[in-house]
Image (cartoon, rainbow, N blue to C red; front, side, top):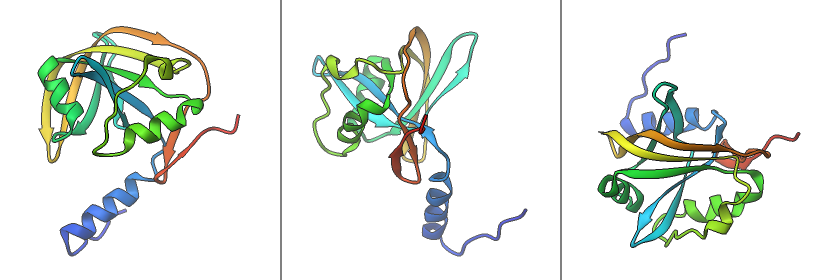
Length: 156
């Protein structure tokens, strides 16, 4: 199928966002140190890149506090969120607010990764951080998902 181009960049951006909203994705919290405390921001742009060496990537707005902190520190964490962490996901997704995270709110997560930045690249308004996974820990539970601009979860 060949799609016809849209007449304006704004329509292209809207069509792109609408199309991407159809992809159900896991919800993660990217963590980093800000002023010596844990800062977390909600993302759905997290994926594995390589098994050997274990490498992941996360994409963040370049002008955001988390991206600046990760670029400065050269490391970040990722926590895959479970259904019971819905409120954490919502609060860490709000732009322009303090997003310091209490470690207790991360209990029961599906998985955790500690990463050292091995490369980064800027694409548009986004910085993609490639992370060498230094530690990984799996948990169990029902995953929190994002689909059609809403949080959801599997029924079973």
